[in-house]
Image (tube, rainbow, N blue to C red; front, side, top):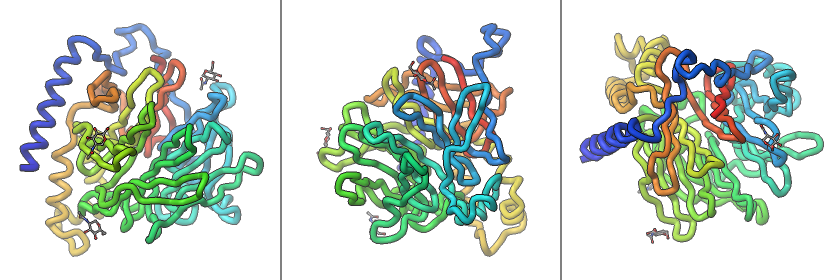
Length: 374
Ligand SMILES: *[C@@H]1O[C@H](CO)[C@@H](O)[C@H](O)[C@H]1NC(C)=O
Ligand SMILES: *[C@@H]1O[C@H](CO)[C@@H](O)[C@H](O)[C@H]1NC(C)=O
Ligand SMILES: *[C@@H]1O[C@H](CO)[C@@H](O)[C@H](O)[C@H]1NC(C)=O
């Protein structure tokens, strides 16, 4: 039953792609020779040894982007001449020097791992969903983070993404799991963990509330332009859910050909949904990890064969085609698709953030952000 539903959803997506090639479709990576515009794509390299600019935010003056990286720092882009400067860090002050430059997931519980970023336009303050430390706010003056929310009944464990209702100051955020840490995200997916939650933090009353629970790896979240609904990336199930704020009900909004990460509203309308990876790439990467390889070829108590089957099922659901992101309108129709034709290694895309005339493309693994002039 579930399989059939998935199949028909994939068929629907395939049909949409076909019709798109006829009209609105555009490919992000036409070869430069073809369009004669070598300078449309640029990389903004992260300094100081860190990697993984997962999420991006612009402040109330349109400056930035700001991003959080693997060593806990929050960086701000100051243009080509200056590059990235250090805005702040989520790491505790006594850990700052030790954490700087870290790419080690085992260090993350000490250094923090800032994932979701968003500015409150009214106060000018930056909110950060840190995978380990919960929902944080940065004070404008000394730029030191304060935790505003880190538990609701139980500790969050894996805070991931956020969006802010700029009218009301209410913050919506996701907790991907109540069992697994970010460094164990693969286990969360493979075991079908469904302890994820959609949360709300009201900055006026300072109250935290659970909106939806029992989600399978909820990831990105974005509010609609009229503030009536939220889209949530239901990553393990390769789909986007729509949550109506007025009556607290939810429905499947869109079934995707890959694993969704962050969702951002586009200033031209609709939402950019970043797709994490292509199947081939992830497969190769997974098999390069010694513990997976061992379990795969020799069996393992730690990782029973049912989990391996789960993993293979998981991989089968990934697209082989290089779709990296999609822009959907507020009714769930595809407006445009970003595609990777394969020569450029654009993988592990975590966010597509449109600002002025550019797409800023973040990744959870890479040492840079891509910029693409529309
Ligand atoms: C976007 O445009 C606004 C208005 O022209 C400008 O102030 C801002 O710096 C721009 N931001 C970026 C990141 O290009
Ligand atoms: C949702 O999760 C709670 C807490 O783990 C559990 O008690 C409940 O049975 C779950 N509900 C569904 C519909 O799975
Ligand atoms: C909730 O509200 C939305 C928008 O008005 C509507 O489309 C949906 O059917 C409602 N759901 C329920 C269960 O009332």
